[in-house]
Structure formats: C-alpha cells, structure tokens
Amino acid sequence: MPAKRRLAVTRRALEDLKLPTGRKLIGADPETFREKHSLIDKLVHLRSQDPTGQEHTQGANGVAIYNLHGQNPWRGVTWHDQEADIVWLCAASDHDYGLFLDRLTNQTLLPEAADYADLESWDAKQQPEFFELALEETAELLAEAEANPGVEVRRVIADEVWVGVQVERLGGEDTAADVYIGIQYPRARVHEIEGDFTELMVLLCCPEALDEDIDWGGQDFPRVGGTNVNEVVVRWRRP
Amino acid sequence: MAEEVEMTRWVESIGQIVAGFHSGAEEDRDAVVGFRDALMHALASGVAPHVVVGDVDVELGESMTDMIMTTVAAVSAGGRVTLVEAEQLMSPEEAAQAIGVSRPTIYQMLDDGELPTAWVHGSRRKIRAEDVLAVVELERRMERADALAADAMQPSMLPLGSGFEDMREAVLKARATGEVAGISNVMRARAADRVRRAAERASAAQKGHRPATSSN
Image: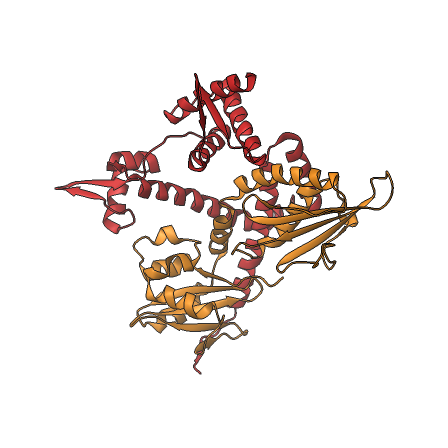
C-alpha cells in the first residue's frame, strides 16, 4: 500500500521561524499550522506534491538539500528522508544562505533523534485509548465471525480502522480454518507505524496465531469484489 | 432493577469525580472501573446509556457520554481529574501551579507570546484555561519525545521486547487482564527503533558533506 508522504518541521526550524507559539507546533503536521508562516504554507503547498525542488545544495556524499522560497525575505531548506518518505523543513532564515551552509558544515542541519521522536510522540498521543478500545472491539468482532463462518463481519475499530474478519472452516467439527483479516486505513496518517498496527490488529483478532501460520499479504479477501483499496489482507491458517 | 441500583451507585461516584475529588481508595476505583465497563458495554451493544438517580431515569446524550467516558478513563487509570471550563480565566499563579513552573516563568511565557494573554488590567494579567492546558499537554508530549529519543540513543536496549512474540505475549496478557501497558511498551520499543534508524540515516547523510553549492 502506498504510504502518504509526511511533511515535518525540525525544532530548530521552528525556532528559526520565531513562531510565537512555536513550541506548541513541535512534531505537528504542518498542514495544521500552515497559516502561521508563509514558509510553512509553501512547504505544504509545494512539497506535498513534489518532495524535492529546483534549486539545491548538493552534499559530497549525495545528500541534496532543496531551497524553499517563502514570502520575502524568508527562505528555507528542505531534505527528503526517502526511506521514511518524510520531507523536513530543516532551517529557515531571512535570506541568509550562509546559515544553511554553516549548519551543513557543522552537521547540525538535518533532523535529529528528538525531531523524529516528536513525530512518534505526536502519533502516539492517542494510542492507549486506541489500544483499550481495539482490545474490546476486536474480541467481539472475532466472536461474531466465529459464529458466522463464511460470512465477513466488518466494523470500524476504535473509531479509526476498518477491520473485516471472515472465518472459512476447513472441515467438519474441526477448529481448522482459514481466518481472513482485512485491515483498511481510512485515516490520514499512514506512515511507517502502519506495519506495527497491522501486526497488532491481527494479533488482537487472533492472539493464538503463530507467526509461521500467518500469511502477511498477497491474498485476496474472499468477499464479493475482493480486496478493497488501501486494505491489507492477512490470512491465519489455523491448525 | 439490580442494574439500576448499581448504576445509581456509580453515578454517585461520578458526581464526586466531577466535583474534582481524587481518592486512592480501592472501592472508589472499583466503582469507577465498573461504571466505565458498563458504559462501554452499553455503547458496544448499540444501547443508549441510561443513568438512574433516585426516581429519575436519564438517557445520556453523545456529548455527555463522551465527557463521562473521558473522565472515568482518566480516573480508572489513576489520574487526577479537575474540570475547568475552557473559557475560564486563570491567574499567573494558578497557571504556574497547573503547568508546574514558577510564576516568573509564566510571565516570561506571556511576554514571549508562548502563552496568550486573555485579559489585562494595569499590571494584572489572566490566561485562558484552555491555553494553560495546551501547554500542559505539550510539556507531556515533549517529555515523551525526549524519553523516546533517549531510548533510541541506547542501541543495546533495542530491539529487545519489540518482536512478534513480544507483541503476541503483550496481547495475550492484555486479553487476560484488560491492561494495555504491555502493548504500549512494545510499540514504544518499536518507535524508539524507528527513531534510532532515522536519526542514523540523517546523520550518515550529513557526514562527509562539503558545502558545494549549485543551482538549477
């Protein structure tokens, strides 16, 4: 499933921008505060479509930092973390390109662990409530699916994720069955964390499942019309 | 009728909570957890929750249910609950107490615009409770992020406790006890691992850079 590109602003860039409520914005999706600064607005407008840009500064080992023009005199530089597909606004200044070069030289330009941790912390804000709700609701989902073999039982779990479960019995009174779990993420935040959530949702639905009995992807959900868009389908071959 | 009696008892507990009470008494905690479970059961069954107070039977609307669920969830998790209206104004002293900083720090935050001033009269200033709570939440989030970054910088701790079997064990425990802390720990270990890998990626990209500039 294609992940949604994420935009982010480093703590240092927020300080550069001298946003009056800068600390409130740490780790936040720039879309939610684009009106606070022309450079943030440009970041959202341009980099959500194209993770790079035209003017760039090329590092010796291939790292490329792209210039971003805000309302005069504001300029910034962005870096695309390709592996995580995150475009970072790393620094901003009032047309002082020397600042960017100094930080490149001092190796203080690109995001640090704390910046990445801010994103994780932002994502994790609602997790305990999500886990508690998911724990209860998936148990009910599986119980209903077990009671209705061959029929998909589908619900929104914890107000966030569509989960469909279908139990296909493999024979007579035996417990052997193929349990299909379709997990569909309608939410906007679809990042690296999604893999963890898929695993968690599968285990919440089937806590007895062993890793070797699970097919983690590639099969079609056995409903009319098959697998939905943005849906991950997992099959547990229950012995 | 027995259920109604039980509900009445829970509602009395909720009344105490809404008044801002915080008690370590086990029976109070049990009552709150029981009320939360009854509410969740009603909601999961698609039944509108009712409470009975004396002879009066009240159906809880969506917003009231949300408010009570938030309150009981916080209290059953051992938290302290104080209800304040978002529009309520707080003095710098009260804000300092809520955020856990000194009064001069609050004045500095007001001067820097980090906390908006809602009311000024001479040298006296007041702050909206909503803005104070936003700072409290931010401080918590930053503490979490800093702790996560610190975890990430200790590779020897990782990826212990973050594999499939760890998640499975945490889920089985949660199923048995209703306690999700184990799941949170596994997710946190994985998050720390992602942070560490990402930080290493950024650091590697940055090292060895020579600032040769070009434009196209």
